[in-house]
Length: 404
Image 1 (tube, rainbow, N blue to C red):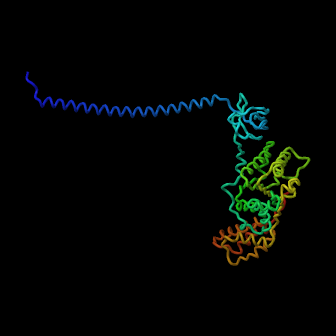
Image 2: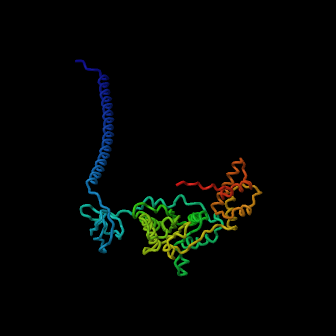
Image 3: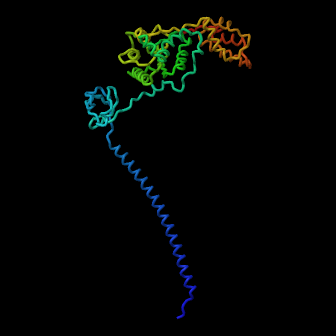
């Protein structure tokens, strides 16, 4: 037998070796692909296991009975083992406390959650305020009114500074003297004399929390709702202390109580009694300054006006000549007026004008200038504005006749 050439055998060996190399690379590539696939599957497995655990936890939570809301009435021992609670369904119970909560400070009035089966306290609930009450706090919309924007009320501004600002900014001064700082001030006077405007200036000048309440907002149709709002308003004020609490249109809930009151009047009286209890009750009012404003001080209940509830009663009268001049100077300041406009003439033409009237007169004078397509306000514009606002040239129409 004739043997193969040596070079042919060598070529076969080389081809075989190349084939093995190619096959090895193919296996290595496949191995890498399998490792990548294993990693993806492992990630998917971990994700599915997490979803399974979440579903199991959610299922366990659904199987648990719902908790009952209750309020602590009294704590029976110092170790927080037994307390008396009033449940949301009505009756009171003596219950035990979960061992995880024994280190917590349990006090009467605290909201807790009870287990439905064992009635054991398992959780302390946060104290929540009504959204209606929380919306009364002015945070981002504090007015930009300052004392410099108020004219003719120098005495009233001084009263407010002593009653509201000084106790908040320098409380040690009252401690040195040995007296308690004033807690409340009542603004009264005709409409448009600057009561609400001065309250806005107080909100701007102090760094305290400012809560504004309209008296009519506390008149509710359900029994006890108005009194509850008053309690929550003062609770919010204590939480945010130092606080200035401004109650505008106070006469809406603070009218003098009558014996022949209707059911609606009695509900308003309940709100008034709760307000008086908060102003001067057994609970310490804390660092809260109360400002009330009304146009009808003559109808307010005398019990509300006694010292301790309102330490200062400040009158806002119709501005006199000097005050009207100061108010005109403030409102004319940004206006583009002609040199023939004399301030003293405007003051003499508005003997019964309030601060609100004067502001309206300045605005109306600008409107008359706009109607003339002018960019400057002249004397005639102010004359027409005074007639329009003060209704000097208004002809009274005859009263209509009614037929029976």
